[in-house]
Length: 231
View 1 (cartoon, rainbow, N blue to C red):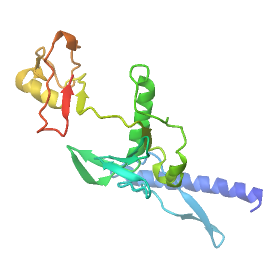
View 2 (view 1 turned 30 degrees about the vertical axis):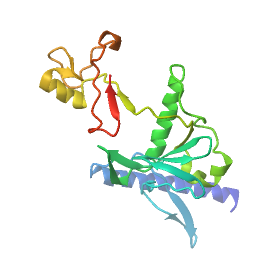
View 3 (view 1 turned 135 degrees about the horizontal axis):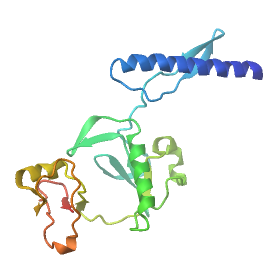
View 4 (view 1 turned 90 degrees about the vertical axis):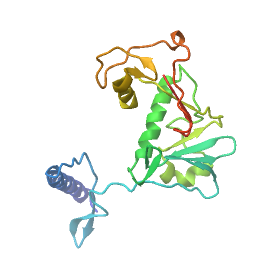
């Protein structure tokens, strides 16, 4: 195709993309749906520019991950764990988990968001505490994983083989969730007495744990897969 013709087709496809998006956005808004962005692909058929591939469809969620030749050691609620010999590969799927139940559907690219958020905060907190990462977000995959790059990109972490501490530490900064429920019943959170008159989502007064030995509550293992140390 001649450069001039090519430029004209770029202009035409751009104009069509905007028209299609505006039409779809109007249709969706009437039904309470927001289309933030999307993509279109065009092709030629009998001399005319036509819409091809798919249109206004979300990417399919990645619910399961298998890497032939690489041993899977654990499948959790959201993440899959593979053994790379001297380290582990953690892969965040698009599965949805709520109250320890895995839903049958998923959210496209959710695993990518979870992984990139973790990378961000590991970077921000590295001066406070070390973490288990052996590779950063922008580092390339090692050679054995290159053939799976399209599946693994942006949703993986290569990490140290650490021994897990079977305790989950929950820090409560605001009065919400089960803390709010407990406060309504007894004016306490984790057994700690709080001022009267707090409302849902109130900021909690800061408490130095060293001043209150033994006041943190350890929930029973019967209620959780691992114990939660609420702070």
